[in-house]
Image 1: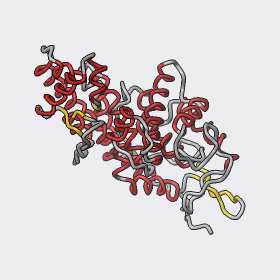
Image 2: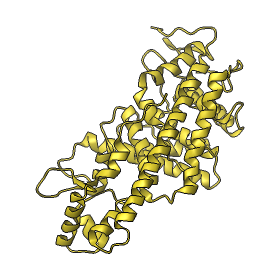
Image 3: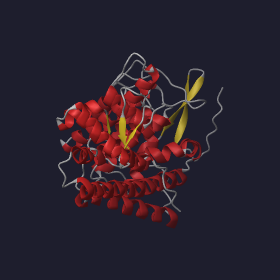
Length: 382
């Protein structure tokens, strides 16, 4: 039964396909000229400004590994949560510290793997762009394979376009046979430099990719990875430290509805306003959170940086290893077990470390002030 109604302004057509019809979007750019009014122009300017501020931090801040990896990780966790994964930053760091044991929840392990795969996909994509590659069919398929490695999936076809129809509720994305041509056209649009302001083009591409839905599973994750890669490729990000998925995650219904409204009614401007507002808010959020982490690092350097005591040396290592065990401390600092525990307890008293398992043995600790910054709720901007 066909339940989707399309107006005459829909940027695509319904094509008969068996007992149902699929939606075939028109190639980009949109057929009609987009209306870039004063409000949308202002949002483009604001998003560009905050992305520029965020990118400029790279020249101001000597990035420790934590600043680089934690913001990618935050993006990866938020993206996994959009897909229904039960995972948080603690779980990912705990998995890296302790690995999997016989008592581990298999679904939780796979959720953590989704996050690690997402991080890997972003890193691989950035490396590919730095190596002179473009956003191509080969890169897209390779990133899909990275994302889907060892995780829950509704398809066995990994790293290749889907060969069966999919149904998103009552909406049917393009038929398998039309996917390669539609994606080739989309990638050509990206390589051509687009038709509008780069941030508008990135929003258009994201809608188009998700509407084509080229893979059997993982399209949302891959689409969000591609947003980061496009921003990096266009020079808006010096590092992949924007976590746009947080905005999509807390506005899930609007995220889906704005894209549906484009398909039904050609409501491009509402989608662009939504997407670009997300870029502006998350760039500002990431900028401010990065500065907080940097300020905390400077405070630790003032407090602990000149001391050779074990607890001071450990405090300075937390920006590389914010989640650890006593055994980790022994190996990192080449000290005995009792010395490691004394250092940990000293930093617990300072409020720098906190124990998170509540157990008497196999205890795990996290850098409480670092995680407080990473996990605090997003700021609401006017």
